[in-house]
Image (cartoon, rainbow, N blue to C red; front, side, top):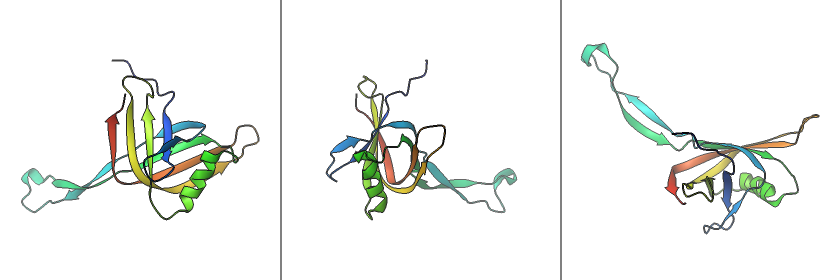
Length: 143
């Protein structure tokens, strides 16, 4: 099966706390969620064949990273600054293949742990934003 084109993927933020989502403008790159799981070692002196043994530990929802063509006057970019400053978690979504019959949406609660801006002499202004997921992110077919 051939791969899917990621063009058009959207980052959305809950604007009201009641499930009303709006698109964050000018997103150029997205990655995540980068989920992980701990491995708890349970090796004993009588573990078979002298191999370490493990059991499943806690899961981590990971992070989502976004790169944005930053516009300081854009209200969706200003909202991310406000999200960084607030104490409560906020809900976000990544919409993959929007409008396609195979559209899927990641929904997650997160806090912003990092915002970095770059102002190069020979390129566009960019902002990188790191969202730390709290709890379990969910992926659902929405197309």
